[in-house]
Image: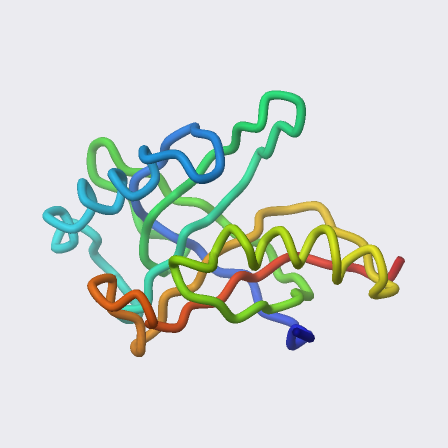
Length: 151
């Protein structure tokens, strides 16, 4: 499966953040904690959601994961929330579903990236949950955005 390559301008995401291992139950739990607090996220640009992954520690297998929504960069977060600034970047975009998320990440990093002519660029990657995504439907489409640069 070939990803789309696209450049996205900088944007900011406000939400809840946890340090966890990939695939940890803490991540879905974070979304469950965020949903009742949606109205606290002022300045939301849309109902599209983002799972921003940053500060990945390969040795420990841990990362910072922010579940949230795009906001204007100047928005101040309410108590207990954070704002993550995602820089302008070129991405390889992989389509998947929640049940195939880990498989898609494995394919992206171990099959596509080593043979692509690109390398992983510095900066956060993110999951994108658009208007066609419904958490209750395992076949709902989502996307993974992996930052890349010419290798």
